[in-house]
Image (tube, rainbow, N blue to C red; front, side, top):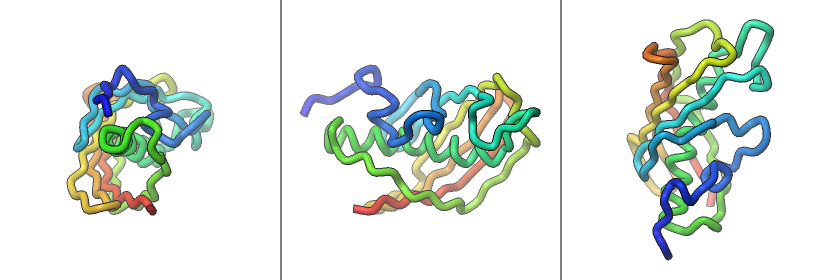
Length: 145
């Protein structure tokens, strides 16, 4: 199997999300342990109202960033056409430091696998808007066989 680079892959290769639920705009870096991604806050996002988007969406941004990392790992080990079932995500801890995400804002998320055993991962994620820390989350991910 040839080793693929990030430029060989699409977001859809890495994540099971489609349509309005694929929130990642750009992957900045990825390897088998960590990823960072950019998101652009849009009016079409879930939990949007007239003022912006509820910060609870930061959990989904963290999960999609973790999904990029774990999708990358799957493709490197099993190939591009391997089964890309999603992961069940549990929130171990989440802290939000903003009341609303303004439309048009650029959010950078960085996720790192802090624990990995078979189909279980624990992931730590920080989310920033420009230089401002706006959220932290610790997620637990499980993927059924």
